[in-house]
Figure (tube, helix red, strand yellow):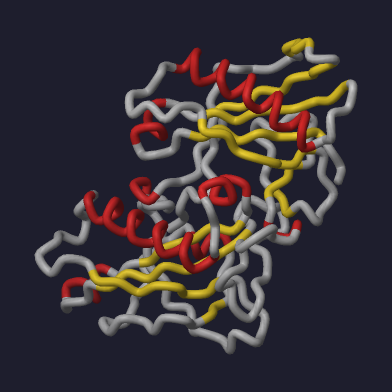
Amino acid sequence: MRAPALPRGRAAAVVAALAVVVLSGCDQSSPLDEVSSPEDGGSSSSSEQVETPVEAPENGLCRVLDVEAISQPSDDTEPVDCREDHTAETFHVGELPDDAAYDDPALAGLVYDECQKRWAKFTGADASLTLRSIVSWAWFRPSESAWDEGARWFRCDVVAGEERPDGLVPLPETTKGVLLGIPPDRWLACVNAEAVQDAPYLSCDEPHSWRAVSTIVVSEKEKYPGDRLVEVLSRDFCSDSVLAWLDYPPQYDYGYTWFGEAEWEAGNNRAVCWARTTE
């Protein structure tokens, strides 16, 4: 099941010149496509059920998975040597409550909290890079038959590039610490389109026209400020942030992705700032 480590919000593009902001052909009210969340299960009910072992998988193993595989609730792919080509690395194996029902929707929330926390620690991602990297994670549970036999494990795997047309990005021997410091462009999020909205996220080492250069904290308030205020604050903060990132050119284009009340209540009070650049 895919996790929204790089969630979609609402995007707008702006042309700025000499501190005069002009809105330019942007749709500021249409939400972008949602990345499938843990609550969604990441797969359709028609997906064929994979049979998994009752025993919990080992941590630290690598596998060759594709986007379809990480959309499924269960996975039985055989591990490969992490020195060989692979697209997934298990960074955590946990346990689910013994008395939980297989289809209990609360399980997804438990897994999300645990995997997200451990993913950030394992990769070294801070709050900003969590929203600006193509590195994310997927999780898997036992098959229903294994669950009936007592299996209560879940597995969290690092993956990267799930939106790329060419599929998941091959991973290094280990992704431990891969987002520490200033990560290479290979792991950072860019798009190659006229606008950020609806464009698939690519690695910044691929041809691109927009780069996610920073995130800003919209407000420290616990209560959601409202769509209009969040959008305006995101626009204004990102204007300054992108201007500085581009080293104060006389004219520049920037975009911003802001998030609504649901994401705010889930703990995301940031907006993503985008610079139009091929660098």
